[in-house]
Amino acid sequence: MPRESRVARRERAMEFCRRMGEAYPDVQSALAFSNPFEMLICVMLSAQTTDAAVNKVTPELFRRWPDAPAMAGADVAELGEVIRTIGFWRSKASHCVSASQMIVADFGGAVPASMEQLVRLPGVGRKTANIVLNKAFGIVDGIAVDTHVFRIATRLKFTSAPTPLQAEQDLLALLPHELWAPVNEQWIHFGREVCSAQSPRCDACRCVDICPVAFKANGNPRPRTSRASRTTGGARRRGKGA
Image 1 (spheres, rainbow, N blue to C red):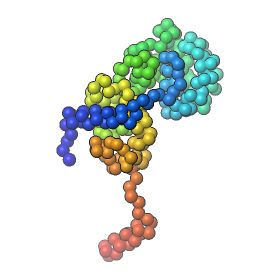
Image 2 (image 1 turned 90 degrees about the vertical axis):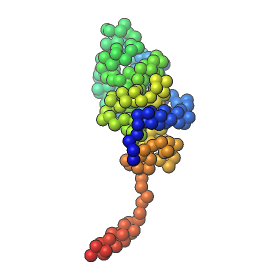
Image 3 (image 1 turned 90 degrees about the horizontal axis):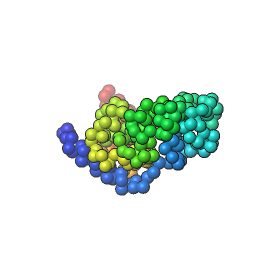
Image 4 (image 1 turned 135 degrees about the vertical axis):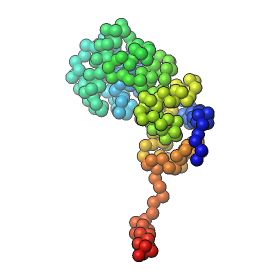
């Protein structure tokens, strides 16, 4: 198979984004938030945790500590008890308090609205910062590459990068700026519903004609043969070899 040119890959990636826009035109974050501070905390808590699990703990969390000044003074252990039903709650509790303290000390109590400043906060990397900038401030400074986006970008050969951080740079170079904003939410839904890590539903995918590994992706179920057939086949092969 001839090597794909960069122009061809770019056109294929843009077509994929167009189809994602058709499939998920109005998709929104499932996280419940009402201001940039709540958005930041929700995204910090959502790492390796479902949005539904986060939404269960945040009403009480924000009732007790509604803003950065309040959370900056929280006892880490007490805050941890409120969020202990989500994954990695101990480290997340510490990061929530530490990030709030930095927001108060360095940014006057308001969540900063720049990538450079956001990634200074404890527990905040580019993925979290991209989501906060996009959803809370309407600023598109990159693409939030989570496990779903990383898997899809790799599977469709839009990147060969070994890490999500490096994959983001490949996607930014590949896609025009106007396509960056919806990538995270649309690709997450596509990854959950169709292009899953195990047993991707290639038979239900609208992008098989532009996917280089359609029906061959890791985890895709293959036609099964009965145990009897496998046994018979093995016996025939052994008999032929003898």
